[in-house]
Amino acid sequence: MLNDLTTQPPDKILELMQMFRADPRPVKIDLGVGVYKDATGHTPIMRAIKAAEQKWWESEDSKSYTALAGDAGFLDAMVALVLDDAVAREKVAACATPGGTGAVRQAFELAQMANPKARVFTSDPTWPNHLSILKHIGMEAVPYRYFDNDSGAVSFDGMLADLAAVETGDVVLLHGCCHNPTGANLTLPEWQAVIELMNAKGAIPMIDIAYQGFGDGLEEDAAGTRLVARSCPEVLIAASCSKNFGIYRERTGCTMVICQDQAQRDLAQANLAHLNRQTYSFPPDHGARLVTLVMNDDALRADWQAELEEVRLGMLALREQLAGELQRLTGSDRFGFIAQHRGMFSRLGLSPEVVKRLREEHAIYMVGDSRINVAGLNSETVPILAKAIVEVGG
Ligand code: PLP
Ligand code: TYF
Image (cartoon, rainbow, N blue to C red; front, side):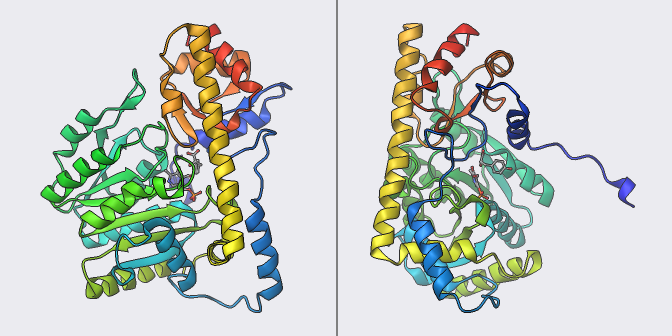
């Protein structure tokens, strides 16, 4: 039987992570996988998470099962964090999932259960796992233009033109903020135009929000998602706590479904619980519990927000420095978009050949499409990267 298995394509980002680890050169720069790193290259546990962990260790008195949809307190905290008061809580169905990936998977599957013919319109480019999950579950992905490689900006006219092909019941997948892999984001008027198009066509928005707090701020980064929540009758949302709470390996995420009324919410809620049951029964709880403790304790929450803000501003400063350095070395504004982009990532628009040379000749690792993780830099490596890009003729 097992001989009938076929080989599967590797995850290119994780493959790059292995290559970096195996590189014996003493000086090397990892701009690959999307994990936050401080100036020393360390991925820290956030102060508030450590404190919540201690508190939870002292107070936890059972490890019995939670509920199929996860802990209700966590779901309330996530709905509040992502949606604030954009919609009434009674209209939101939600379930805890293993990471944002689990949330994406459950949201896709819910759409497929509701409409087996639903296609999912995905930005070109998008996070590769969106496409591989859709393929795995047999949903058709339809790419829409999103990024202009030359200017580093959103190709908004192209996006709207391609989205005009959506039909009633299709899903339009949007990144809530900090677009992965490009770093280029929609303005609020652009969100509004996409909303009008989706509503006119009867398409269902799905928002993947994995970097809330990494772009312009916690509230600012949720503004597009909240506008959609207020404006569209049915919305799917996949949220991740991996990055903004720094709890990657705890696998903490949440699928939310905005419904038209309470009866529809109950139906969606039962289907989310059903989906969790078919996939893994109960979702992981430890990370979810830490998030809930942080969100519900004024002091821990304030400290978490302060640390998240330090992280965000640190990445912004690196963006400014890199854009400035490249401007100085090239005498042009060609790379000015790096300072305009938001979040961990920027797609630099370099050719695969240049990306390969940077890796082989300079031990600088970035994803093959020239996506860099800005947090992989520090103030000393920014000039090294800029010089290397110019040297290899990027
Ligand atoms: N969605 C996007 C766009 C991502 O970049 C990520 C990766 O970090 C995720 C979802 C889910 O991440 P995780 O499953 O680690 O929470
Ligand atoms: O895009 C990234 O780098 C992050 C982390 O299979 C990641 O989203 C990468 C690959 C993967 C899961 C997470």
